[in-house]
Length: 296
Ligand SMILES: Cc1cc2nc3c(=O)[nH]c(=O)nc-3n(C[C@H](O)[C@H](O)[C@H](O)COP(=O)(O)OP(=O)(O)OC[C@H]3O[C@@H](n4cnc5c(N)ncnc54)[C@H](O)[C@@H]3O)c2cc1C
Image (cartoon, rainbow, N blue to C red; front, side, top):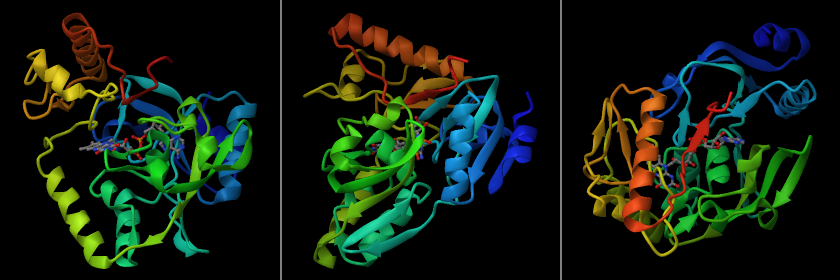
């Protein structure tokens, strides 16, 4: 089926990109193409699109900044939905309201320049608000779950506003990893002294300078309770371990760097690392990264 033709003939208010390249739209820089990418221009067209995809049983998946995903090789016969036009970012009743397509950088800057604290831990994390909510992104000093009050979502076939308690947030997890689209969020906006915000922002930014450079997905595995996935991988002697054109970063055991590998190669390396840690340390690592289009 030609999904591009189908969507353009049946729906309005969409930007459509045929033969969408995962390689060009993800930080890991691998994977094949999708039949079409659909970017709704407004809430009405988003809801109409999502209803249509569900009613017609058209395979689809969501993509934010593509910073925590491993997209499969080959052609995904389905629709990638992105929200770059959901870029509203404003104050309302002592809260910050942000669309799913707002970048992490824009959100942090908005809060910082208005003297709102709590967003400093997100400094430098590549993401959109949508992806940040889905992944409950953050560092140990703060996650999205700490600042989120409400989430606007398309869930179970309808538009809904969920309270933070209803979002199922836990360590790098949310309810939306089981399905549904995040369309925007309402964040608490607590005023803090500007010097404090500037100092924290600088500290978090400096901390990130030590992260490995190159094409990656950030941390590949969730830290097991009370432990560090990177440390366990290091203790298994896997830092620097290479498999073809991808390797475990010699700087940080939880990062895999891609230098032209296929998604299959990277997936095999992830599986090898998890198997080795299980065999040598007895610990089961859970993948933090989200595999896209692997099961089609
Ligand atoms: C160099 C580097 C450093 C990183 N450092 C950190 C860090 O310190 N802390 C941290 O938590 N993460 C980190 N990450 C991982 C990544 O930045 C976060 O997971 C971020 O939240 C991903 O956001 P995204 O918009 O790129 O989402 P994507 O990677 O595009 O998507 C992630 C998941 O969310 C889904 N999704 C995306 N948008 C939507 C939506 N609107 N509705 C429904 N589902 C959606 C996707 O289908 C996918 O399952 C790092 C990544 C890199 C490359």
